[in-house]
Amino acid sequence: MATTRTAQKVLTRSELRARLEKLPRVRLGHLPTPLDEAPRLSEALGGPRILIKRDDATGMAFGGNKVRHYEFEMGHVRDLGYDALVNIMDYHSNNARLTGAAANRTGLKYVLILKNSSGRAVQGNRLIDKLLGAEIHDLDAKASKKATEYARAVGDRLRKEGYNPYLLQDHEFPKIAGTIAYLDGGLELAQQLDDLGIKKNVHIFGVAGRSTAGLVLASKNLGLGWKVTGVRVTYDITMQDYLYDVVGGAVREMKLPVGFEPDDMEVLEDYVGEGYGIMTEQVAEAIHLFAGKEALFVDPNYTGTVAAALVDQIRKGRVGKGETVVFLHTGGLPAIFTFADELAGWRGA
Ligand SMILES: Cc1ncc(COP(=O)(O)O)c(C=O)c1O
Image (spheres, rainbow, N blue to C red):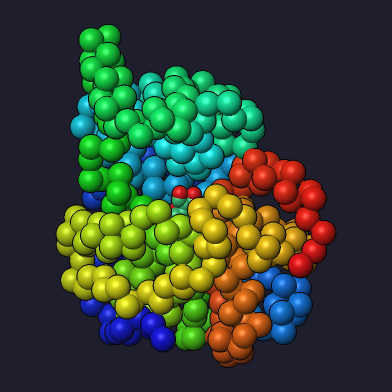
């Protein structure tokens, strides 16, 4: 069972805050986000106390974790003098939406190369991308395989037009910004837990990704002793490539005394189902349960998968009654509209 390895403090909160304050930053989000109690959900599961860290409520363009990420990302890009962003994402991507929102708020041109999007309904994130006014290039499945070359050509065109484009795919910072941003999120959460008088047995559930890794690092460096469980949502990319290889970049950038090790986060592998973007029965049930008990929405791809895992782990008795669960709600909500037919047709597990 993974726990944060050390509850020994190696950085004070003000030292970590001072390091974060040195980074260029653009304020985009409504922060701090609430830490809400979920008593009816907890009661329905016969489980422990459950708190929801409401990063679905970060504000900009339907919210989510990437609003935090982009505060640092846009500061970085703007400081380097770029004036256009070129992004390659899948048609239902939250990143595609929030990059566009951050570009608009910072006054940058935004070109979005959307994979597997030809012929798709203009719904969910794809609708928001359009409303944000992104220059969208819809690629079919075949063209999507060459999206990187496509983006390079777009970059060349933009340069001829006088722009200084930033191709997100070519840089490290977009990969590490999320972990850095959640060091800040970790400081915020630590204060909120203090305010509630919660000092121990904190168990965080989030997507097995870069934001959750930021909470791990905050916990290890500040000696908070949080236990962190990450839930995998895709097998399309290995944990090594997605997380373990990049998180060291955030540690280096922030000169953290203590780094990340894979077993700092227990990774639950069993909730992906047939694959990323295919909603499972468990996720559909969790979406209904969260909405029915707490009027809280989770999405079919990310937070719904974490919700399904949390429900299952509690039912199986794998979350101690003495623990306080913090569910890191990273947003993704426009995707429920992309899955409207499946969700509306769902008749119960
Ligand atoms: C809603 C949502 N939650 C979590 C994640 C995981 O992101 P990260 O690895 O940056 O924490 C994503 C990624 O796109 C997302 O859209």
